[in-house]
Structure formats: C-alpha cells, structure tokens
Image (cartoon, rainbow, N blue to C red):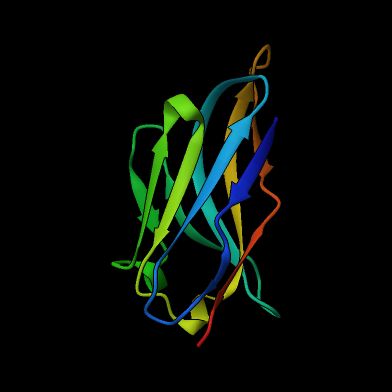
Length: 120
C-alpha cells in the first residue's frame, strides 16, 4: 500500500491550489484521510481530515479557506486551498488509515510530501 501526493508548487498570495493523493495497493477499507503540513523549523500539524462518512475537521488557521473531499471509489483525497497566504508555505503530507486485504488492523500510511510555496 502506498500514498502518492501531487499538485504542489508555487502560487502567489491570494491564489488557489488543489492537492491530490491516491492510495493504491491491496486495500480493503480506508477510514480517515487527511492532510498535514510541516513548515521549516516547525512541527508537523494537522490541516484537514475527512472520515469515511464524509465528516470533516480543519485547523483553525485554514477554516473558511481550505476544503477537503474524497472519492472513495478512486481511493483519493483532495485538498482545495483558496486565499493562500505566505504562512501556508510548507511541505504537505497526505495521510490515511488503511485496512489492508487479509488484515484486521488499521495502519497509518503517509504520502511522500509535496511542497507548497506561497510567495510573490
């Protein structure tokens, strides 16, 4: 099982960007999916999470600007980022709790990280 994130890059303040993350492999079920970020010199922090049932939760710093969604049939989670600010600059990591085929356990998986830079 692996997670593959895409969609990062450079964007101007006030701009928008969408990140995608696809889970692949011998997957039986995916529970929560989400995005974390880590800025230089800071700890990794939760940005947004979405449950299998579609409930969402966001960090206070991104509420009203970011949206998270998922397509269960594609094992994909998206992060739509609007009104981006320089302080949103970070490496963004996708995360998923996955039960593999033939297993009864939920395991945490992480994507490789994608750089988002907000700068003029």
